[in-house]
Length: 244
Image (cartoon, rainbow, N blue to C red; front, side):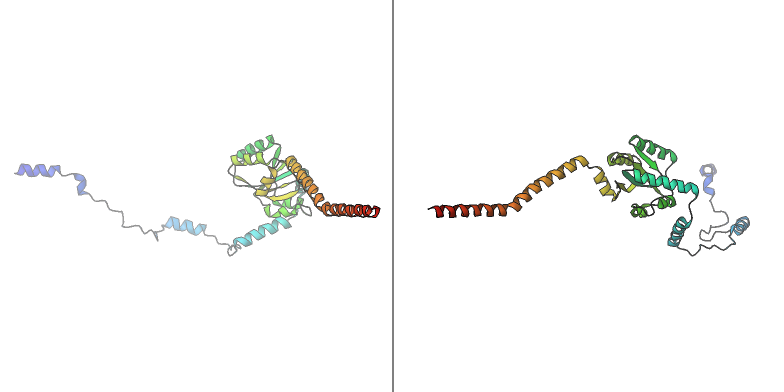
């Protein structure tokens, strides 16, 4: 009997005799205990100066940024750049406004190469430079599209189809609109007008004008010609009656 009792005690696993318990009780998640070193570090990192922008809203920050951009005078180098921008605007038949998100310079270079192959030029200028370039010009209606995230594509040809294919390859550049032959257009109208074959459209317009011109001439001359023929008939009838 003693032999069986000893054997049963030997089969009992040792890990059942242990119980895990968290050291020094539970952890207070809402109000954790801050030790001396951490409390000292927090005290040293606490700002002791007055924050002038503490109660300002986001709209006030944006207004201050815009006011500093417009009031600050341009440097001589920026004046040269503004003249360059105005030259691009005057000499280009197609101008595209792009919204550019965070993108690496290598990806920008790849886009520049694709655009250059299609005779397009990717440019980026600061908002103050572009605003100075288009001041007192026919391009002032594009002011709402100008920001620090706006880039520009200039081309001496209208080729919106190739532009659309290139922009589809990058996911961080979006066309906002553009200008074709000096006319500012929304994105949908810009793409629609740029995809047109101008020669075919002009031929169709000439044909429509010619057909409407002929019809209009016939309609305008119908009543006078009818009156003339009736008067001739009356005149010939009277002469025949007098001869009889």
